[in-house]
Length: 313
Image (cartoon, rainbow, N blue to C red; front, side, top):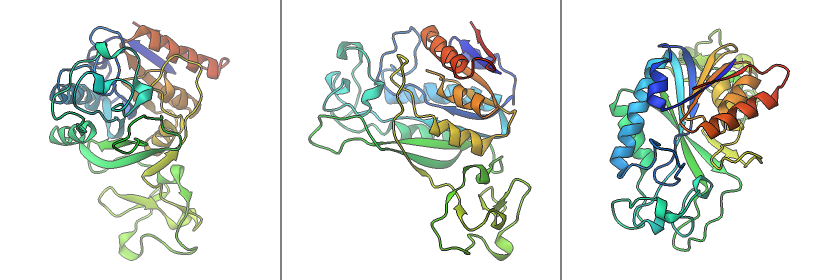
C-alpha cells in the first residue's frame, strides 16, 4: 500500500506512528539551487546554517518514525557561494537538473564568491551531533552528468548519499545487494573468529559491520559504496528525480518484504514506485500538491491492476 501525504513535512511526520517505518530513502531540496514555487519550502533559507538546522529538525522527527533497527539514506547535492547570478544555470551551477526559474528568485549566499559551501558535509556533521550514526557515505557517480559551461573547475559528476542509523546494530541484508566479486575465487573476506554467520545470509564481526558469508559463494562480494549509475528518462515534469536503482539498492539492503519505506521529500515518487515493485509499503510526503499528484500517477500507472495508492491532504 502506498500513501502520499500533502503538506509541511514536519507537520505530516508528527502524524505518523513512532517506529512505523523500517527504512527511509530520500533527497531533500538542495540549498538555493531551485525555487519550487511553494510557500514554506525548504531549501531557500538565507544561510547554510539555517538550511542545515532545518533539515536536522526534519530528520529528528524522521528518527522518531523510523524503527530502531532501521536505516536512513539521504542524497544531498552541493552548492556554491557568491552572488545570485552564481546560483543560476551556467558557470557556477553544480546540479543543473535541480534548477527551474530565474536567477532573481534566488537569494544571495554568504561566504567567499564561488566557494564550495560543503553543504553535504555540514549536514552530515550536524546529524552526527544530533545523535545519528553516520554509517557510510556512498558516491553516486553519474555516467552522464549534466553539462556545465564552467571553465575554472571540474564539471560536477557525482553526489553523496549518506547512510545513517539510530544504533550500532541494525537490519542489513548484504546478500540482497551482492555484486560480482573482485577477489580471486575461493577467498573469504572474514576468517576464523572474525566471522559469524547469521540467519540473514551475511556475517558480522559484532560491531554492526556486515559482509557476505561463505554460503553465498565466491562469485559474489559485498556491495561497494561507489555507484556508477546513468540517468533514466521520465515524462513527468519534475527535474530532480534520481534513478530507480538508488532506492532499489537502499530498500533491498535495509528492509524486508512487507516493511514500510518512508520518503519525507517524495517529489516524483521514485522511492515509492520502487518500494511497491519490491513488495513493500510506502509513505511519501510533499509540500507541493502537483508533485504529490505526479507521484500518485506514477505509482498507479506502474501496476494499474495491483497498485493501492492513497493521497491524503
